[in-house]
Image (cartoon, rainbow, N blue to C red; front, top):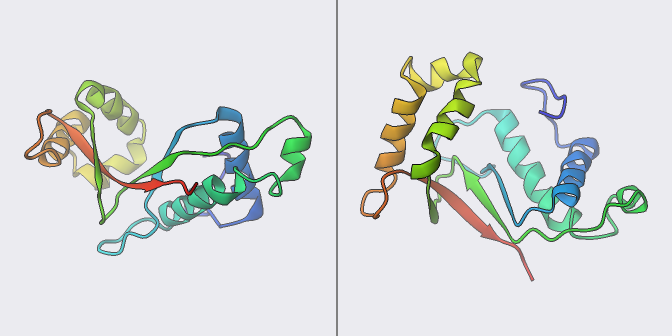
Length: 155
């Protein structure tokens, strides 16, 4: 959460800089975040802001030395992320097999105790995830999946 309060995220230079620094430090090939462009259902404002800021941090900010030059001066180097996978999307174009990691995902989700009651209506996290991840893979040859909107980095 980078020290930000729930419900208080803003698209600021400080927040974007924190994400750029994490990208430059961790050097991921793929960044996962919320789809800020979802239109067919309500999504939490923090999720929209996070998705927008994450995409901006990926491109162009983390990639270009002109952005956050203080990070470069302190030993971070620019980094090009190859692609982003955005969840909670209404425009999925990629599916990932999560059959072997479903229990890990359920344990992580269960850590959000204040949030999961409204999301799952009292259901057990593993059973709720299993149901939703099975629905996502109709017609595929794996048991559980998750859909994303895949965005490729420009050259």
